[in-house]
Amino acid sequence: METTDRNTDLCVSAILSCLALSVVYVASLYVWSTPYNREHPSVIKKRFFSVFIISLISPAALYFGTNEKVFQKATIWELLGLRWPGLFQATAIPLLLTMILYLGPLSIQGFNGLWRLYTGLPFLEPMYWLGSIRTLTWWRNQVVAPLSEEWTFRACMLPLLLQCFTPTTAIFVCSLFFGVAHFHHVIYLVGTGRKLKHALFTSCFQFIYTTLFGSYAAFLFVKTGHIAAPFIAHSFCNHMGFPDLSEVVTLRDPLKRAGLFSLFVIGLVAWCFLLTPMTNPTLFHNNLFWHKYFI
Image: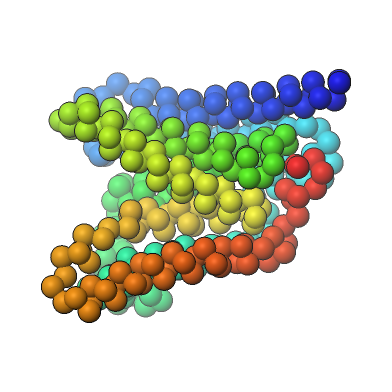
């Protein structure tokens, strides 16, 4: 009975810690008094500072909320997904897997001549990359937001949840926190003149796909044991955006339209079949979340 009560307390503590991390992360974006919206450079800079501070203090929740027996098996750095073994694989394989999922959108970019921007010969378009890295929006979308979100919502939350939940349940709970955290975009949408009803509808749709992505990112973290895996997938997805079929639908050539539709389906089916074998923990030298203290 005492052991059961202790496990229950640990689970409650883990949920409350994750809730606190979510609230603090989102709240940090709004601590600044400003008349500008989220796209203004001054707002972006202030939010960079906010998430930097949150990223510094977030590991404290993991450190103080982790059962001391866990630290007999792993260091705090390993729990956070900061380790050398399997790092190259954790960077390359999840990126390849995510590109397979985006086979349809990537094919459209290929037909449009955008392939060469990032196909191993990036210096064919140096001005594109130079222009991108000079903008705060690019740094926010490709580096700061993916890194800070994966750090907070995956690295700091998942080890807490895995102490008392199965990996499947922990991934689901973690992804819900991530999805709900994106509801704050209602404020931005209303501020840009959208009607509240439309803003809520858009945010509900965003909740669905961010929760689904959150599940994928959490899955990558648990299977690889590396923060690099969900970060690289997150950054790539931000670059590509939500898959858009509108360009395919408007094609006049029925054969080309059918071919591109097929590539969307093939990418999704291939991703489903390859997801498990390409994220086998042995590929990443990962047994971190599979010992008895994490199941």
